[in-house]
Length: 134
Image (cartoon, one colour):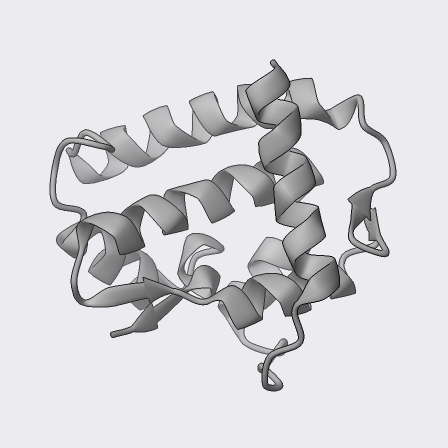
């Protein structure tokens, strides 16, 4: 639980401190992720990080994370409005990870996720909003 709180805090703190180049917030993938409740947003962000870590074709788009955190109504000045959402984030991460694994026939943290990343990008899912080609 403490780790979950720290990871959510770190996510928000990075968003508050970084200022990268402008990103396009009008794509279908970005609109998809902006419409998600915060726990699902955080879960999809984590899956995108795992795709980027396991696949040389993708990098995690930190500039997009910063822009999305600034654009979301449930983050303010780089911190969560409601800290109690941490439990919801952990539950959403579990559900999203299981769903992602079932959809793509992979095991996150074990398998190479390049094909899964390719499919997410092709479908313009919320996860793909955080991925950029290496």
